[in-house]
Each structure stands twice: as structure tokens, then as C-alpha cells.
Amino acid sequence: MLNYKIILMGSGGVGKSALTQRFISGNFVEAYDPTIEDCYQKTININDETCKLEILDTAGTEQFSSMRDVYIKSGDAFVIVYSINSTSTFNDISSIIEQINSIKDSDPAPIIIVGNKSDLDDEREVDEELGQTLAKSTHSSFIEASAKLNSNVNEIFYDLLRQLANKRKSM
Ligand code: GDP
Ligand code: MG
Image 1 (tube, rainbow, N blue to C red):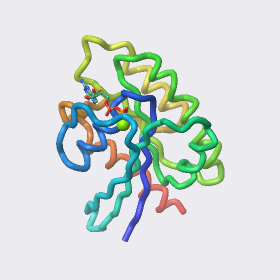
Image 2: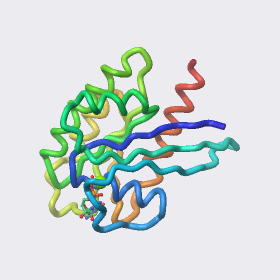
Image 3: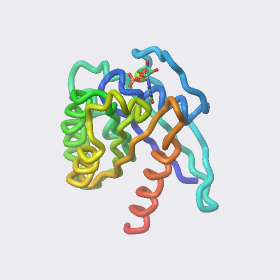
């Protein structure tokens, strides 16, 4: 059985927990305790193969980036989240991606950049093109999603599984 560990990262309040809860339980959790960092499991079938996903919803409370190193090392693929109504959360993600790529240097890990809260288009601060450009320059995937409206949430995880399958084939 395939077994993958997927890590969600990004600034506080961007919707990491909302996306995780939506994917795991199917519901939108409006106010999830921002200090809870937990690991969830979901088994899915893809192309006749059973795949066990372990999903770590980080809380970003670690004081030192060296503590981030520990869970980056343990991850097979990464969901890097910002929210489209906050430029500062977008600016925060470059250094996270750099950290992942430097740690996974010899064995690059699939990454998807997620612009969450796409339902808040009237408050938009980050153009979709900015996300796309960053994804291109970092060899990541990109998608805008809404945990609230359940838009493109499953697609996030299926994209990573596709990237992981391609990586396996090329080994
Ligand atoms: P985290 O700190 O990254 O885990 O963020 P949370 O999942 O706790 O979400 C922070 C806040 O944003 C909460 O008030 C959520 O209800 C809200 N939120 C999360 N996802 C969405 C979304 O897709 N659309 C909207 N409008 N609000 C969202
Ligand atoms: Mg959270």
C-alpha cells in the first residue's frame, strides 16, 4: 500500500485547518482552534491503488525555523497556503518553499501552492497571476481554492498524488 505524509504550511489564519477539515470530514469548520496541530488519516483509492494519506495540519507556533526542519524532513509532499485577501500571507510563502527545497535538495518533494478563500474575491489583494508565476519559478503546482465553498479542495490532494505518482515512475 502506498503511504504518504502530506504537510500543510503557511501563515496563521489562511485556512490550513479549514482545508484539512473539509478534506477529512467534508465540513467547513468556521472557528478551528488556531493552536491545534494535529495529524489526520485518510485512505483513498486512485487508479486501482489504495493510498494511505497522513495529513499534518501545522499550527505555525514553532519559534525557530529549525523546528520546522523536523517536520519538513518527514514530509513526502507539501501544501503551502496563503489567502487571496492578504498580501502578507502570500509574501510569507517564498521562504517556506525555499526551506523545503533546501532540505529536500537531493530528493525534491512535490509542492502545491494554494490561494485559499477564493470566495472572498471582492477583498482580493493577490492576483491569480502572482500565484501562478511563483509556482512556475519554484516548479510547484498552483490552485485557488475555498474551504468555505468546498471549491478545489479535493483537487489539492489529487494534484499532489499525481505529482507523487510521476515521481515514482521516474525513479
Ligand atoms: P489556519 O490558522 O491556517 O489553520 O486557519 P483556519 O483554518 O483556522 O481559518 C482561519 C479563519 O479563516 C477562520 O475564521 C475560518 O473560518 C476562515 N476561513 C478558512 N477558510 C476559508 C475560506 O475558504 N473562505 C473564507 N471566507 N474564510 C475561510
Ligand atoms: Mg489551524
